[in-house]
Length: 235
Image (cartoon, rainbow, N blue to C red; front, side, top):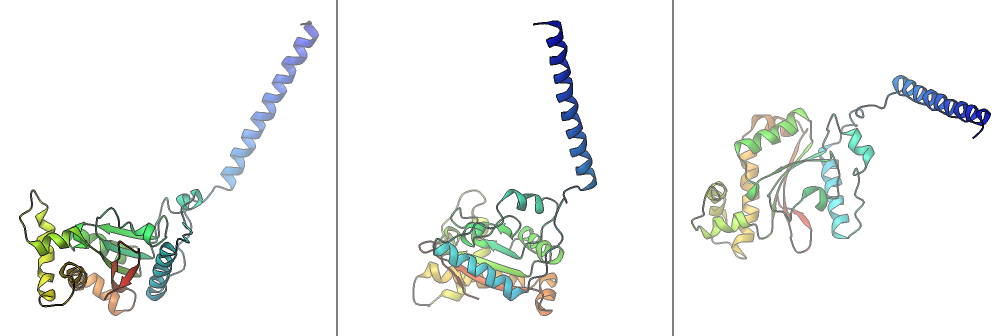
């Protein structure tokens, strides 16, 4: 390689480096002057009835296999990274077949999930629900039971269970008195009765009842059908 060509090549490399460096500085300056927002502004308030309609429409899409998978992209990930405004709060069973975001066709930040076997109101579950309603202003609270619930079945059968498994059975048993003498499947009747019983327990919370009385919160009970995917309002 000739000395002249070597000098020219070095000048070319230095020139490219200078251009790249200028580009990085310009990009950094642009970011500094126009940074991406850490989170989006709080969305417009949704009424309890609209929130329920939105939830049930999502379930219809799930049942009809026309899911949209909303709010599940990177933009939504960044939008809710620093704040959340769930339009619905759901107390549901921990059963792996009952994932709220899937069966209601929702995405990140849409549903505040509280899941525990038998969808029972424990002190910890209640505190979580109160947090979603009182601090996050979630306008809809659903207690969601499901077909052939193992926790409810265990409560109906009344057999001894190992470890701490029996704790949720104890929390369900008061609901069983409501199904004595009813026609139909005892476990399925107990699933609905348990939803109604847990709803009554929630209404002992002053934080929740205050919101219900002021029409800021709607409390509903639902039953999920494992065979069809349909959610039915039962209370």
